[in-house]
Length: 353
Ligand code: ADP
Ligand code: MG
Image (cartoon, rainbow, N blue to C red; front, side, top):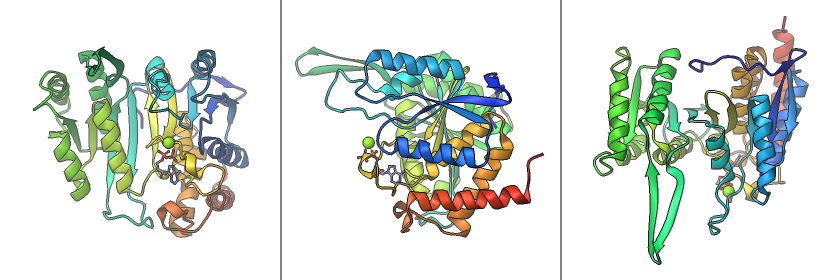
């Protein structure tokens, strides 16, 4: 349940049009699986596919942004960002900031048949997605001296905190943990902590705690069951989210929503390209399929969301169709085909009326 969410209006003949941005690496084959699953179960979604990759020109990025603005909703693979060329800033970051997708939300839950060190994990990670260390303001004042500017604003901290508490309230969650480093970053993280704490006063039924990011990392890998909802500034949120995804089985399993007041973009939680896996039919399609389920829920298509989600769960848990990343020998197509067969049975048992 997404707080304050209204259904998007872009609908024609009872169908929604959404953007599909395949991106690089495994993105294109994963989007193809999703299109296959959606058409198989007659999900009322049309796709407008838009190509963006690291090597495209500025005009192409503008076309992608325009398409998302028009449709309101997108599902997206990751766009490769070269590390070594300062000219190439991340297209992924550009997309999130230009569309003001201020909240990145991941739900990390233990899947019973996936081998992991810890069980019983159920954590919602809410990350500020537009400012902080990702402000993109860096310069070399004189050779050998670089200033890298982290910008934080009360306004943006307020809205991410609001999202965290409203999400907790709407989903029956008990506790919100704010992750920070206010002992060192006294002003920047100090403001973050102050604003989240102030907001917690408005939500008396939800327990609030603050935890320093280094301790939060240690607590996560030793006692992850203690966490419920976590709210974080941008960079810590990125790292903590990846730890949490790793805890429940890795990059192939968890989806991530990017939400703003106007638009929503659905991705995998860890935002990998998986370039080394591309074209081999070996990448785990679970994270992308879950992203597509998140998108269906957002669009109010609950019947199809539930059918696909249950069918995938049956394939992973009851039938143990596992790709190599979670210790199995199945291909991505095996997971998708098992999911399709389960969808067929579930739709017979529970027809849509
Ligand atoms: P690369 O771009 O070099 O493939 P990434 O940074 O994209 O690496 O991904 C990090 C790691 O996660 C890699 O080992 C990659 O193989 C793995 N990975 C990413 N996505 C998936 C997936 N869907 N299924 C299994 N492994 C994945
Ligand atoms: Mg990569």
